[in-house]
Length: 135
Image (tube, rainbow, N blue to C red):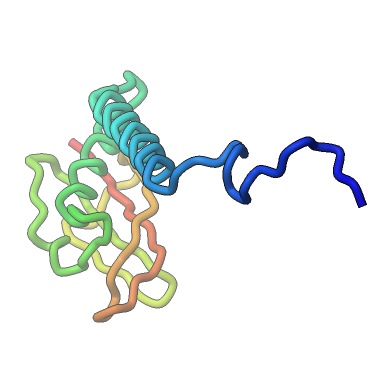
């Protein structure tokens, strides 16, 4: 049998392949750039506040930051929250709820936010943080 090419190239040479080290470096650069972009975007959006945020939303943000500093709320931290407002904060899960503050009056401003709550060591459940603020 005859071949159409005049000379045989050794396997692996003459083809469009990239060295593994160069490919890994390129992948690391892309990942670093994406991480930097996400960090800058998160930092830029963290300072953005809309005028629609009422006192309940503002207090709910502060309560969430204190109760769940690492993203997972711990119910014992709820009792340590004081903000200078008259408010009631509740972490409500399907099977249990934790509350701090006085009972809210009718017509008070409310805010609800989803949070993850550690209900037992190694057990995290999706719950809701409800903050009610009044004057």
